[in-house]
Image 1 (tube, rainbow, N blue to C red):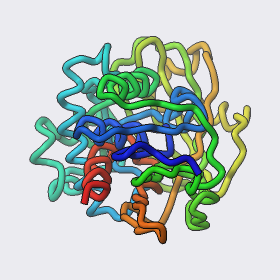
Image 2: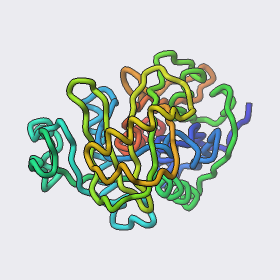
Image 3: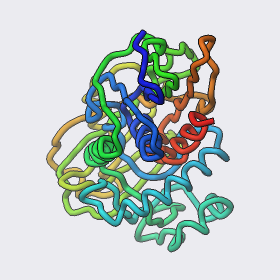
Image 4: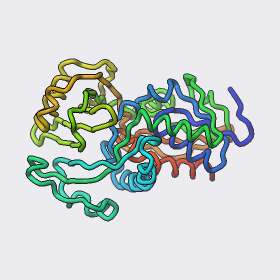
Length: 317
């Protein structure tokens, strides 16, 4: 067991949840080491779209509160999009009406309105939301952590007990299935296709009301990200060519110019789904403190700052 220095905190997990939690702790003056199994650019978070909107994250009421706290941060970061990777972008949430957000988000999202028939072929909501380029944002978070005095270490962890610091924060996502162990954490496989952007500036999310299949596209600098899938209990990290072709077809049905876009690459990520986010503290038999912050499903980036601040509070009591 590796004992830490006095006030050390070890955060295990280098995705957006772990990085954000480590940043909050370090900027509160704590001495933080972040352990990540792979470089942050290779974590599941790096595959995310990533549009700010609660998706497959429970419980709904808490997820919305965490999301709104995160929205405050992302709006500030969007002032420096080249540095932070965050910008405010307009688009359509398909199969969503104003009544779906009236009770929790309407007051915080000025400009919300029903999409016109020209903008969307069904019921849709026109919104201006944070759109996060994760390749830039993860590097930004890592740099911000280091600037606050934190240390990032690339190391595989086979047991949480390896982190011998007085406080350990478990942000291991799907890895918590074995490390805790917590068999209720399950993968929801998402596949994406990255193409050259044919000039699309707005994003769109659409769900077929009959089949439940999703189609979405997010314009990021230098590329357009197409999705997507949500295959429960699917573990394969390899892109499926047939699935990729279907994603392009569904997106091209929304914007025909996508059909001819040159494919730049394929991505697969396994969302860490759970019946509810586990965000709680646990006293260990040796007197140390373990804080859990995992199980965010498809909403990791959306709720990251709200959950990070709550986890930091739990780690400080």
